[in-house]
Length: 159
Image (cartoon, rainbow, N blue to C red; front, side, top):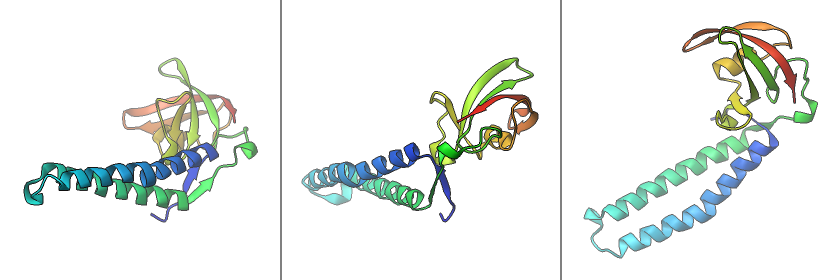
């Protein structure tokens, strides 16, 4: 995974906190689970031991993935975002012309995407996020999504 990961400072802090939790708290929990399962005896037919070893493998995989993301992180300097065009880090209010509704999105790197956040955090790699990059306030764009083409108008861009 040599690709750069675009993150805000907040996003990097969140990844680092998760990484620290997995390395310390979760590793210790899994070590304890393995010790308890071993105390049950025969490991060849020990479902608790197998589950604990699976949890250990999953935890180590997630640690490796997070370490790679942190290593390849490029921090978005939100204070220098040009609010005249949509870029990673922009807060964008758009109108879905065909549906007659408006919504607001923060364009972030894929590691920080969270559609349930407020405002919604969408990836620059997503159809809408990518389709908005480079747009200016007042501009209309056709964005190709899995559900079809959507016509949107950029209402406002801010940081």
